[in-house]
Picture 1: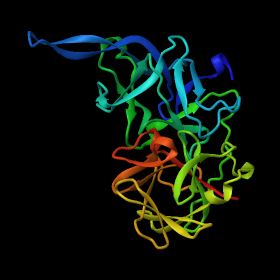
Picture 2: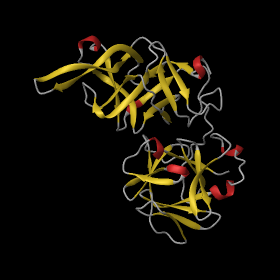
Picture 3: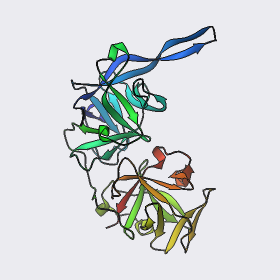
Picture 4: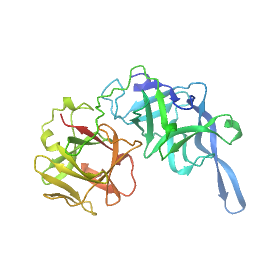
Length: 318
């Protein structure tokens, strides 16, 4: 770790070639005041981030400080070193030029995670909730930053999502990028608190293992009851099978988990920001048109919209 237990980095856009840079220019918004004036522009506590030719320094702080090395699977904040403000995205608000999601600096923390780019070495998508740190050729309209390319949060996927991170030591990758096949024995991990699905009595709960990302180091008393199989009818219909008890996981619309001896309701496993269906990548798991998530007391819950509690990783059981 470096400053304040964080990693000081630069973030370079893989396609555009520029660097992510923070500014001190406040973002204004149009507001109506008591219907006396039709509108006026009011400054906010949000500040522009831009893509510039000159590098700028950022501090990545992992949520789980288990190592001095940044590890794949960590959630982290991205803090602008000079202003001490945090990178943040607002899904419901539009960027000023392309009307994608708003990405800016604020005084409050926000958690990001990384998804690898399989085709460009050392490049990553940097994701906040369901949107990605993104930039492109379009420039800002506001005159004080109109010389700079716009930085946004972007829900879809394209080549403008990828960033190179200048770490002193590479991101630790204990991941085997093999295709997931029907019948593979796997562990299913919730990324937010690094907890695994496990059979507990007659239900499924989330429990912590005592490792971080490396399946060969798993040495947990309940490891056998974590072993699942993914059984595909197709990618839209996946059944989660508990190997030790030979049962399938079923969740009804009231979030009641049942263990069934036969296939009842399939899940849909959706890769995040990727077209590949690979071990170690991040996924959403959907059922009843809702997203399987971490609920209270380490239980499973269903959300109408995906969030940071809805992100899963599938790892092979050695």
